[in-house]
Image (tube, rainbow, N blue to C red; front, side):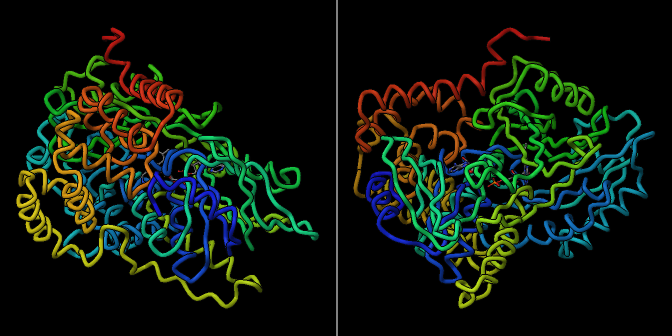
Length: 554
Ligand SMILES: Cc1cc2nc3c(=O)[nH]c(=O)nc-3n(C[C@H](O)[C@H](O)[C@H](O)COP(=O)(O)OP(=O)(O)OC[C@H]3O[C@@H](n4cnc5c(N)ncnc54)[C@H](O)[C@@H]3O)c2cc1C
């Protein structure tokens, strides 16, 4: 039931049944809550107005990390809680999370020297419960430059090396949600909650929502409703009794840029200080280097945040500052993305100083809301809010949280020890299905134990990929995304199911026509829908890539 071809049946189900819980929002927070609730035995519906992970959860730095820099602000509690979650997120989904060595260089006259860096990293190791093999190592100047020769040499005193985890935020959200659906959650994208259903005591007992594809209205009944709408959390509260329980939120925007490794050949992930005292990541990934982020107050519509010339110039300045031999300018920006953080406002603090802690609160109508937090802490946040729910009389019979050791979709029986061997084994199987070893490896690394469903698609569709002028791996990804991950629009595939708009934009430019045709045929788009979805994709490509085209050369 997680196929885009079954949207109508899913909407019918939502209309017909009464659930224990309705979750509003299909970002990582909502997906985590749905998984926690269903795995305790509740019946759960999840409603998302865009695509799953269409909000902030596909626009982060894509790290599962404890937030080392929060130590600077003495946010010890946040670092301890989120830091401990890193390993759990990794263990539950080895195919979407990868350990990543991170280098923290320090300089003469900088805020931190060898002693304070060592102390900070040691504290981080302790608070986050980092295992022995991944604890911090302090490096000499020579060793630091050996790890990354592109670093600024002038004034370099050494570096601290520690381990974080790299992820694909949108795929993490999708794998959490797929597991939730496997356990019984009914989830739908492109369906917007627009108001609440109340009982005679003015307690919320469901939501009214509108399918954004054909404007059908659905009424979804539930014993409880959870508002996990991220930057839109207050908008949802507005629908409820005059928005009494609105939070004082501050939205801030963060931008990342992607540069080809031929221009910025970074080998080692670096976390470095900017000239204005902030900290920025530079991370090598899939033949590219991405750098970010900015942190500026954002007042526009959070649906389409985009990078401005100022954002890009700020990041380029940071790159020039830390990597003086790297010659990058606007013309080298292959892609970019922007995301909006919903932060709990703290008076007198700059965006970068505001705590990333989450907050849970209950409105008079019984609506439970959650805001703030980090991608990394999603599981614990979900546990905390569902714990709140089970304090209610009608939820008392549900059990305790079980997600700490619950594998996500694609991670069945996989772990750190066996994953590499599994990739090799499945790549050989892929060869027997007609794939190259390299494609078999790439697909298994990305989809984990769900690779069998991909092989099934290949067996059934045979050489349809070549008839449609598509490379086999992209064809399989599109078909899998539609049939097993409810991808409805080409942008769902290119942005959130494969990340190609960010890390392989040339394949998007080359094959977008063929992918749109395939999706139109499989999902039965009307001509109007096809035009709309094509325009939507063109706009996203333009937003992500236009800097290189516009002659904004420095
Ligand atoms: C630039 C940046 C970098 C970051 N980097 C990291 C990082 O590296 N690591 C980390 O751990 N965290 C990071 N974060 C934080 C992390 O991305 C967020 O905490 C997380 O993604 C928030 O998820 P969410 O589900 O709460 O919000 P969202 O992902 O925005 O989800 C909310 C969803 O609710 C939906 N919605 C809203 N209104 C309605 C409605 N009426 N009906 C139905 N659906 C609705 C929206 O469409 C949206 O999809 C970063 C954040 C930013 C902005």
